[in-house]
Length: 219
Image 1 (cartoon, rainbow, N blue to C red):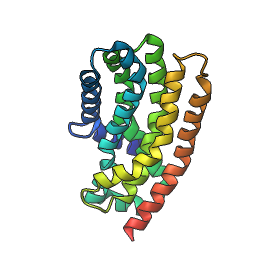
Image 2 (cartoon, rainbow, N blue to C red):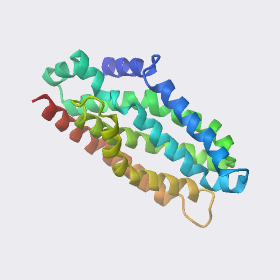
Image 3 (tube, rainbow, N blue to C red):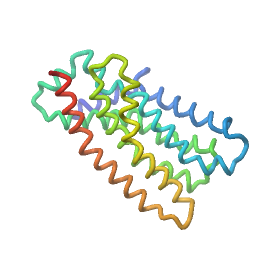
Image 4 (spheres, one colour):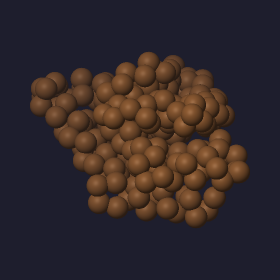
């Protein structure tokens, strides 16, 4: 499992593997928003957490189509199916490595990009914390879509259509917790705990559903 994690992480971090592309896309989305909104700094600070979350969601979707597609193309997926190890566990390791290579850079870049949106230090900390907790859920939910479309050529658009509706609860509670940290008397912990629960549920349901879809696609 450790070797698989390292292999997936190296694939994600190499040139063209998705990590750099995701961060650059995230940067492009965040830097374009102030030009569209205008010079209203208060409005930017108000919508900043939502903009960062939407940018992270779109950047995560950008690299999900390669989560299983490369393994299917080079035959690694067939070896995983025949390895005799729990496929659900293999999928979970792949998702964690994919998040470490593509989702974690988004979380680390969020404090810097928050400056473009005029966020206060407290809001920056809240957004970064919610992204740290919530982006693994986006990857785990997206893994189900990636598994369902693994046998389809150019299935990236279909993957986005499948994944976005199921990502909306994560988006809602992530933005709610980020906004609640700076908007009294709205409590921060309630939406944050719901966000943690969604990530834990995704950690159980995502690998199981993905493994079922991969087994079905191999028949």
